[in-house]
Image 1 (cartoon, rainbow, N blue to C red):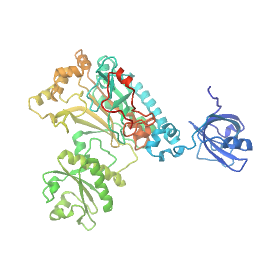
Image 2 (image 1 turned 90 degrees about the horizontal axis):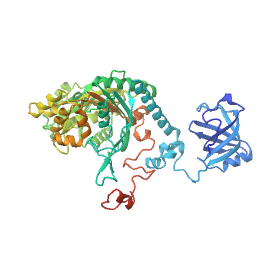
Image 3 (image 1 turned 120 degrees about the vertical axis):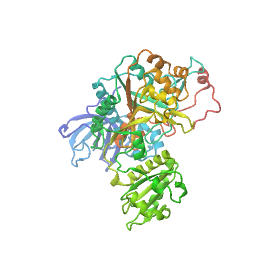
Image 4 (image 1 turned 30 degrees about the vertical axis):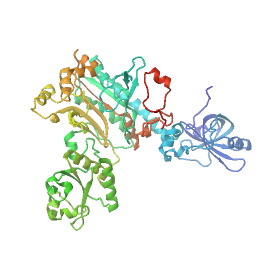
Length: 593
């Protein structure tokens, strides 16, 4: 039976005085004042309304109702004598003449106070997520998420894109993360994979003659969690365009995303389009990161020529990067904590020194710099009061460590970080290949389906030894917002000959390419159009719009850091019969964690 109500709990105003109304909601609080007077706060999705019980029977009725029970009340609206301008319904109250319990809270204690659920530990919040979501502060993120997704759909449709859904059960593909595998009951020993992204399907749509595609796509990757990434599943606004260049894709996304951030973001200032485009190598040299937070005005300086010759073992034979900061008047304890935090994140040590108000180099590695004090001050353009953070090691490692140091110094120095704004930029000209940290061999740096700059000719030069494969650039691009990679995309490799040659450089021959990507390879042999696309992350976008530090705050039912759904008890053990049907056998015991 659907319970009727005449109004919701956020709707009544002074103009409704003397109306007979019916409200439904949760009993948030009951405050009894004497035997014949109680104040009750009733809450629903839309807001709260104050009820005033003024008879012994009504006071007694509410006294027997546990908090967070759902009720239906009927009563008369009147103007409050002590108005509350902090809530929309603060001018009125309702005097109930009847109350009916629709759903009783049968628990003697709540795991947390609903309106203070964000103060509870995360494990408890996730276990009782259905209660956590009753908190208006938590619920508003989910409401905003719904509105943003609707806005994205509207804007993409206006740009001529068709929303097309792609399969969830598909084949395993080397997208760069571990797959979630699903055993195929009808095909013993074979597995489906949940898609890490709709990459192949959207390229096949372009080959099929669809000009502009998008979808709010679920993606599945067996990755570890972090603050800006949830394990298991996430959503992205996947899009692709036929007969398109990099400029076409970047232009569409700038046109779509800026209005969304203007309408829903917590900051008023937003980078106007077109966004700055920073080549990958420039980003690494200046900021030590391919996702730089441009709200921070600090840049890295290579000081190898200045400090490489000092009698300090960690610097000998290494590249040395410096971050120079004015106005960082931290205590030794704060500096030690900064250095420790960088080491935790990078597994590399950093060094430091200051130029004090007397023009003397002090602290940290100061004693090693005294013989070349004047040269250090001159070549590094140091001013009195400067703090200098240093990272040493192989060039790439030194840059990355100094980049983390830069970000943390920005967080600690308000004068160097203009925080309350959205700073957008594109990182472009990514390397096509890199040397794998584990394999020590040439691997794709990002998306293997990207078109190399220079096409087949460039790949053949690398194959003949006329150029270093590490110097091959890819037509790839990332959108970075406030230091977060928020979208990734590329001009796609639509030519099977170029695709095969690109994979040959990473030791995969034509037969293996055909076996791993049969649909794409074969489709491209039938005349594929040039195409390009990208995929902004929806979860991360909502996190930025709301200003939340954890992505789990903007996901309705998130997993914990260990990829567990503690509310639904997943993953869980299954019966032997289920395993037999799937032709599987567990090695070792199945245990609930």
